[in-house]
Image (cartoon, rainbow, N blue to C red; front, side, top):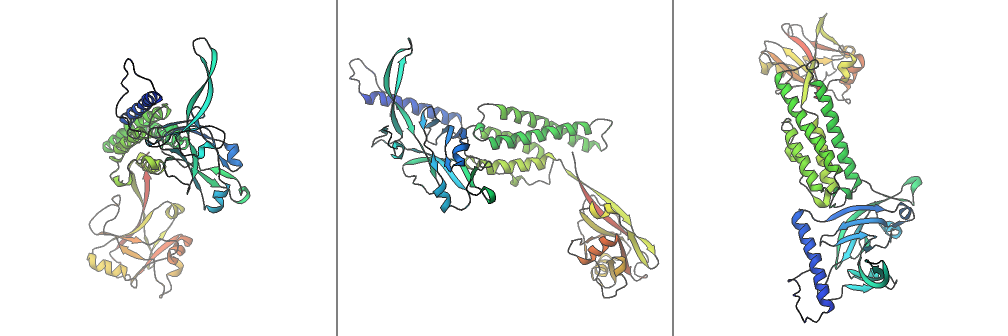
Length: 457
């Protein structure tokens, strides 16, 4: 709608319908302009209630729907807008998977008609933005003298993927899924689909996800508070400071987000900025996190960007990951260095490293161990076969920071895949041995280092 100015009212003006139409359109345009100035994303769903009974019978209809179209037109079903139901049965015969249902409103035209009179003959199919309906209005002063008046209602319609959208503006509303198995022939609304929303009330799914992350933040905050009690805390001052900073961020984020979610007219963009702020504070305490994992706000793909940010926040809220290790030393039994394993050794670790302390030249040691013919890590029952290969060992030049560093100590990563036959034998026998000539390992000590990840809080 383009308005070039307000009507100039003057004495003697011959009043015509165009004057009042111009004034009415001017007021609507100004309202839309104010909304655009006050909100960065001034369109989307405000509230929507789909009829479950109609959906069960293969029709999509809304008992209540409030939304603002991209042009600024307000759709309010059933107060000011008519919205006929749409059949989805035939569409699903040709569609694969889910089906997108959208709201469509004809565009206002400067050069052709914009209203169609309601005669009960499916005027919604006519691409005119208004439908003229006769109603009765009483004198609001006396409550009497009811008179018929014509009012304009928004002539909206529901459309499916592939329908004609020429001369109309469109707003996605819902995604419908077909039933499978015993539910074949039935239809359901995809609750995880999030349409563009003017306010957070436009998507119950998104609101529930936000309540979930806020509750998680408050639960972690309570747990962290207990850990920081003087009688319970065990750690350095540096670790204590990190805990305090994370507690501050969690306290603020959880309380603020719940307050925003409960507010009646908060926008998704406002909530997203709050979550980005929390992500910035929490990720600063986690240098291992990649800032590029957080997507930019996308008003037309709210589900995608919000779920990605929620996932990133849940990871950041865990705090830093501390690596502890378990060390088990090989003992000389006869001619073999032997190590017995426990259930914890086989289930808790994330990685296994063979630590060798020796005076050998590092390059010579690597060649000696990795060749696999003079030095083998094996299960006890397989150590007698000369042609049997041991577990695969590879020098680890950058071992995890938690492992001790000292002169003459070298780490070799042990391949422990479930597909590795030697590792399967070691796990089954709960023991491993080092097979090597005694003169080669005379001055060598060996230990198994097992790293275990512990997330703080």
